[in-house]
Image (cartoon, rainbow, N blue to C red; front, side, top):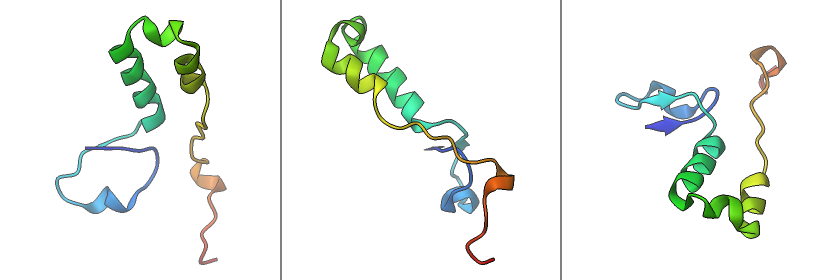
Length: 68
């Protein structure tokens, strides 16, 4: 199983199931599920869950081929 938004090199591999979702969103939800209320009570964990970069890929019309 592959979590990714947009095209990947694994798209054509047989047997690979792709979920079009950002892995950062899934990982944050997993942390909250595992830690429960501690995720909202611990300031260090709260900071980690709110930091980082979540950058969805550009729409197809904004992607320019490197070969052109």
